[in-house]
Amino acid sequence: MQMITVLGATGSIGVSTLDVIARHQDKYAIFALTAHTQIDKLAEQCLQFNPKFAVVGDAALAEQLQAMLRAGGSTTEAIYGVDALCKVSNDAAVDTVMAAIVGAAGLVPTLAAVHAGKKILLANKEALVMAGGLFMQAVADSGSLLLPIDSEHNAIFQCLPAGCGSSASASSNSGVEKLLLSASGGPFRGMTLEQMHGVTPDQACAHPNWSMGRKISVDSASLMNKGLELIEACWLFAVPEQSIEVVVHPQSIIHSLVQYSDGSVLAQLGNPDMRTPIAHALAWPQRIESGVANLNLFEIARLDFEKPDMQAFPCLAIARAAAQAGANAATILNAANEIAVQAFLDERIGFTQIADVVEQTLNSQVISEPESLEAVQESDNQARLYSSAYIKRLEK
Ligand code: NDP
Ligand code: MG
Image (cartoon, rainbow, N blue to C red; front, side, top):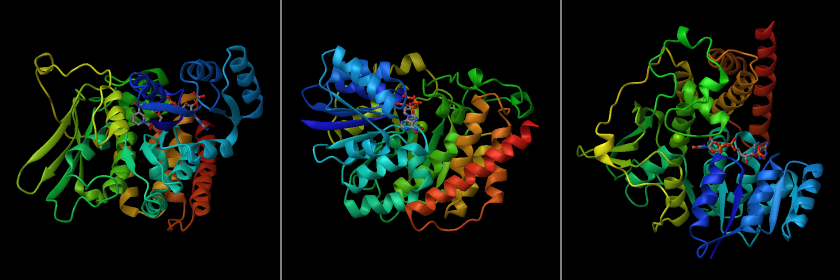
């Protein structure tokens, strides 16, 4: 029996994770489920999966949740705060942690799991983007097993030779020449920058192929998601950014590809449903049923590919430049993007201003190698302060 903590259980990835786990209750049991504010949803999940702990954002919510759980006859203990998130991530009883909190908030609990040598199923790409060097060093030091959930990285992991994924260099003797990162192009594919000026948060969140949380949906629309994924891939597979090419593939059937020196290109295909990478990582190196329908190639009939439009989607080039700059550039990029995306979702700035906020913030900050977690957090904080102030000026 594998004991699992799901960080961000009430989110899109969390719900898909629990859907897969519910199909295999003989193999997996839940140690803890966490949410930030959605206690109704969390209570329902607790009644179904009976975890030892349920974690929420603050004391008042924990009290309300505890009352709901008691009323439902559950023995789950409701606790709260970052320390509680860390406790359920590094507890000796836990084997596997699904890291599916959105944004920088996921870093500290995910690192707690890494330091404790847990098997980490990493959906929370922002944690790796903002603290890549420290994160991968911690993985190496603790011997924890890091498996990618992001569909593209999971696909690449599946297409790399055994032993090459998850923190082992893909270059050496393996013949790996290039990683080809699939991108759907998002809801605004084919539009010009001008045409995107007036788009609304709901339009940005209406992804053609994937149903996801609002933050990653906006990132997918701006292609910042692909930029974050580029940086994520550099860390996961120990390759330089020049070895990664973004391929727009609107059907989202090929989730990414690996090109080898002998001319072979390996791809992973499947219906766009996150339960496939989740099931893959949960059971790895075995395979389990995920609930995802079999791929019907005759129905799909065709697969298209195009280059990303770098004029219309400046976030991709900004992220690539941050990957090239290294040091704390990705920390700054991620922090500014989180602030800008929230401001867009709150309708304080326009969609096309997200790139502007991120670029200005990167230009304003000192680029230096963060030697500690505190240095990463300081850099993150400074970037948030700058971008928030910059957005205030834009609003005037
Ligand atoms: P959602 O917004 O749907 O869910 C986020 C989860 O994190 C919720 O459980 C939420 O709790 C919790 N949360 C939010 N803020 C905090 C906080 N400050 N402290 C603790 N918990 C918090 O996001 P997704 O599931 O879409 O994405 C999760 C991660 O997975 C992201 O990093 C995303 O980039 C990545 N990912 C997602 C994919 C997808 O298909 N959705 C695909 C690939 C990667 P509450 O519900 O209470 O607010
Ligand atoms: Mg992805």
